[in-house]
Length: 141
Image (cartoon, rainbow, N blue to C red):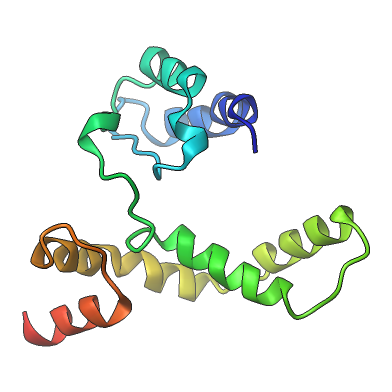
């Protein structure tokens, strides 16, 4: 994905969804610290179009151990390795197939783990966490 494609995605899909779900601007936007999200053109767009956001300088450099989408992409990558592909079209088609068949209960479970993961990050004073860290947090706290 390019910076411009990300801006297009924000304009065409994400912002309309946010406006529909939160008509009173009762939301806070935070990106996942991907380098595309940090490009000057994207940061300028966000500055002018998304007022309710966590400022870039207030975010950690990357929280891929906290956000479920990173786990989902890992699962997609593992599934992609099970087959051989002739071209990029087949890879994209397989990603769409995996995405559409993704277990909604697993997604819900991942989402519900965010508070536990964040508590584990706090316990580790901002350090990187592993699954065992937030499972231990559940057991001991």
